[in-house]
Image 1 (spheres, one colour):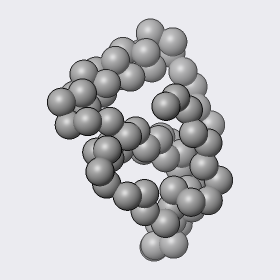
Image 2 (cartoon, rainbow, N blue to C red; image 1 turned 45 degrees about the horizontal axis):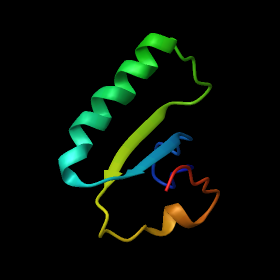
Image 3 (cartoon, one colour; image 1 turned 90 degrees about the horizontal axis):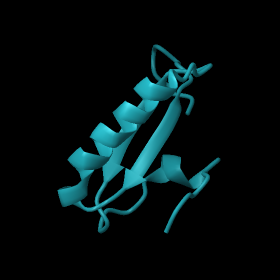
Image 4 (tube, rainbow, N blue to C red; image 1 turned 180 degrees about the vertical axis):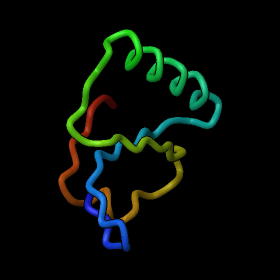
Amino acid sequence: MRRQDEVAAVTLLLTIVAGKAHQEHLLQLIALAFKNEALELALPLDMRFLTLDEPFDEICHRGVQFFGS
């Protein structure tokens, strides 16, 4: 994701679509996976959750890879 603000930072954006009841648990699992694997990413990672009824915003319609169902 390339922001068009004063920072103009380039980051990876991980958008997770999940029900509210599962978001905290997923966040903990993802954090644990990153810690255990000691991942070294070339770019900073931004992570966010959307609920099942929230529409994707414009950023999710370019360069998107969908995983799961």
